[in-house]
Image (tube, rainbow, N blue to C red; front, side):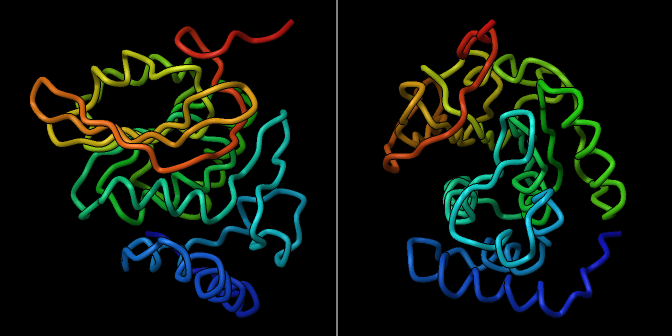
Length: 222
């Protein structure tokens, strides 16, 4: 069972984050806003103080990776249009904040991280907080996690040069894939929806993410 964080200051900062950063923008899904009020973001931002953790920008988490800006996490989550019974795949676990948000909105979350040290640290945090509906593995996220497909939603939390074919293949009927796609320096946030044999795509605007490394992403340097 998930244990609600009892830190009143952190709770106040979460409410402030929702009121100032999310609600005034395009975040309208009440379930998404409720998840952001609940999940203790400061516990997923190693080395940052509580106020910095809830600020309107990304933060480093080690290993050259980041925890995304709260608004971007909220926008990507809202694009999935989750109702509560879905199975969701996340590519790029990082600190675990996106997966934690998804776990409040979907029935089951599967998340893939290529950096073993991050996966171990984040897996320990999930266990301490009681997030029992998240499964994490180490691997090449561009290949997805085919064993548990098809998925009702897929979120990619790193910038890709294109849309990895395995992720499209693992998307279920009516499911949505949210992915930043473009160059190594800037991307467009794409939402792809499966309708039978067709994939319908829309563009949610510009964004900047760390590179998606893998067989169907960018090649690791060095």
